[in-house]
Length: 389
Image (cartoon, rainbow, N blue to C red; front, top):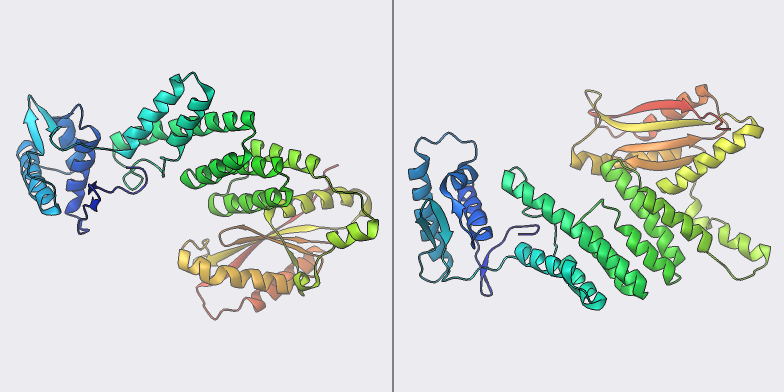
């Protein structure tokens, strides 16, 4: 029940043909199997199965649905049994066919870990629970009340399990296992800042370049997909990273070669970089302006449709997003900075220019972005960068 809902008997998957008529059958099976030990009330089960649909005789409709479900389970390959029975107003799953559910097993192991006194055994239990969590509980059915409640509970338990396991791994200095945990957690629960665990593992094993790249990739991904910035915890990890990046003594010429951009990366237009790099450049430029007197402008370029609204369709974002980036990089000068801020949005830092020249840049972008597709264009917003000191 973590992630995609599937059923199997033994090693054989119970595969149904996908159709809207199977929705009620699926809702029925999810509830009956999850609560197979204690059973479910008839009225509650009717609410789950029929949701807010107007059904005249709910009791009779539920009996018909269960009759059809029993027939379908036989067709799918379950052995002969009285799968679902009604006793004293409670529907129960037959004890003749044992039920194993990943979510219930996760919860059982998690609860054991919480009460385990031996640190080594507690760590192994927490890790076992963590790696059982393959995504949100019944993620494809978020609108059902009982599923939403259980999903929140499991999400909190997973967060606690990862936190506890990570703390124990750090105490024991098991950085490779911490790296594995961080990578898994970041996939199982996206946008939860679990990448910071992998960053710490990289730093503790001297892989500073990998740690910095992971941060930059994560910051860009969070910004593009969700419009959010990395957490304070991740920023603190980056600060620790900067403090710990040590190099052997080298001549200045050798160091300068490492800092210099490679010729094949320089291109002919603006400097395209990740958001953390763009942010750092912006902050440095605002400091330099204090004594340099240069005029700097920040431009936001947004893909819009024929009605002037931001483009939201995935296929158009994919088709025109890269084209816009190329058009921007071609249209700005070698010393200007470009960053993809979100889906279909780009930031441009125009150095030592004027408001009039910003309009010239916009016209140049429009010419280079000429796609021949009349329903897609570019919207511009420009602000002057003020000195922050």
